Length: 149
Image (cartoon, rainbow, N blue to C red; front, top):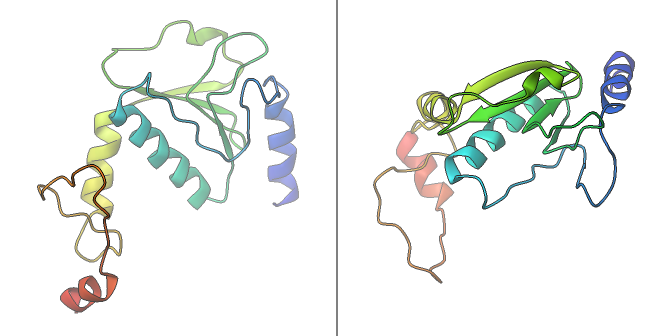
């Protein structure tokens, strides 16, 4: 990591309680069934985009002054909250970071629009039969790549 980025990470991580119990692991996406699937998918997409920019993050980090943002971009010092059914998160003013709020539906819709195309190697056909429990899903990348040509 570039020196200036590491300096920013070191500064921003000071606000996080680092312990295995709180699960504060840099670069890992923590998920929970207490949240909706849409919320967790949106969180994953945001974290992926942060990594693509060469930056790092922490999810569900317990802050020393209280609060647990969905994501903290440790290079930019931004707490990111993913909204699903709630209109806005409460008690964000106490975060020691700048705050961004994004709607889960908008994040997912943008991903579908920009990445889920037949040209993408990760193309997912929407509306196909949902596999039964125990079914194995095999993606035939050769077939997909031939269809694109």
